[in-house]
Length: 222
Ligand SMILES: [Ca+2]
Ligand SMILES: [Ca+2]
Image (cartoon, rainbow, N blue to C red):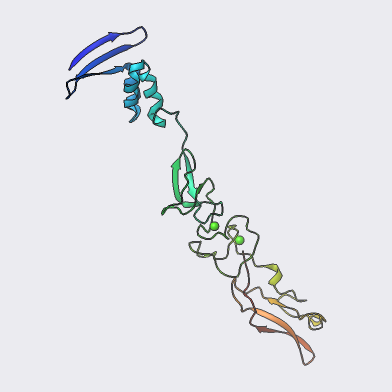
């Protein structure tokens, strides 16, 4: 190996001539800037390769972070949207410059910027959901909020299914004389997804009383 030193107009160049196994010589040129680029990352070799054109140093510098000589990019945290409802799971994340495509064993759906899906395995459970549901969310979810389909931290009951008698959770006198339909509905104590805690107002010996019975459909919540 022979070491040659070349002093250029703008920077100091070291030329090392390598005797390869095949007997031919190859020149490895490193200038001061190129050596600095190599220290920043695995792209130091990029700085070396660029030496033949005299620009290796600057290529190594810019390639140190972005890789492959490209411009550096700011990394963001991306969240897995495994149920593909456009909201991500803050338990499954990845850091990258742009959103990874996902679609693999780690994340069945794409990665997104949102991290607010309270039910990452249920496409019907997401912030802003307006519908009500009679069965619990698909796990995983907050164990105390199995029906929090809109991810607001509460379980709201479908008002259309609640009892609307003349008195709170009790049948008023007029409730037994509804010519179209009997007054009925879920009481305040009824649980989401349950068919109990449901009363219907019936006239009984001149009095209007609520008879607790099984609802034909579960109480829907969100
Ligand atoms: Ca979801
Ligand atoms: Ca809710």
